[in-house]
Amino acid sequence: MFKYTRHSLKKLETLLEELDYTVRYEKGNFNSGYCIVEDRKVAVINKFYDTEGRINCLVDILGKMEVPVEQLSEPSAKFFKKINELTASEEEE
Image (tube, rainbow, N blue to C red; front, side, top):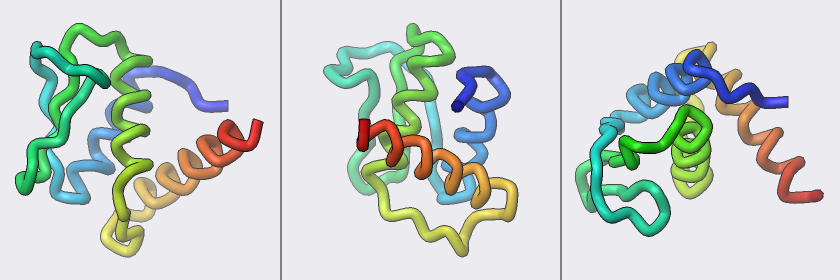
């Protein structure tokens, strides 16, 4: 079970920072709640989303990326593996 807490959000933000991405929370017209700025490694999330919405956006972004796990620190790599396992099990259901 994945908990939608500020602590989990911070872990996701740290994971993306280790992948050289910048996470920004801003207002805008987002069809999916977020956008990736082309060629810049910047993820812009709708600032009006609550913690759960922000986490879901970041997990969605991670799911669409090729993540070099060897680039991550050990805690981030474990967290990423946990997220992948949970999202894989949700897709099976």
